[in-house]
Picture (cartoon, one colour):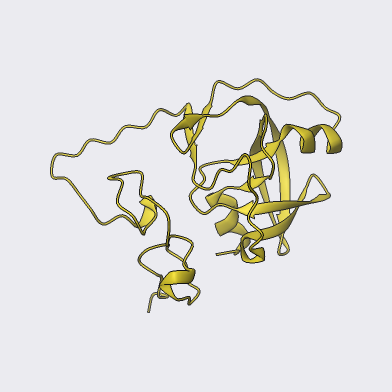
Length: 166
């Protein structure tokens, strides 16, 4: 028997819809409210979806405001340094503020051709770095993108799933 998952967010953990991470989200496929794109059931018969490998999206981007809701915050070791992250179940990649990168790492950023978008706007990506992420006794190797003017690190959907946060 397959485990039950919630149709709007894909989480296997029980929660009321008003507490669902997808409650206020807008699906990027057809701009419908209340579910993530990975849970979207709307289909077009002749739909052709292409996505440039150089374009990635963040679902919960915030420049000026940090959510105080602790349910969406976690601690992850990045190259053995414990750091706070905000859980972003709709993010294609993990991102870190420039200030956080400068404070914790001395190596140079790698150059990237990837363009990151959030809320319909391009983000000022400064570069990326290969990292080893650790949480819940699990390890993941992931690129983290460093973004100018970001106030909080965001953990990608892939890492969230690997660590069992949702």
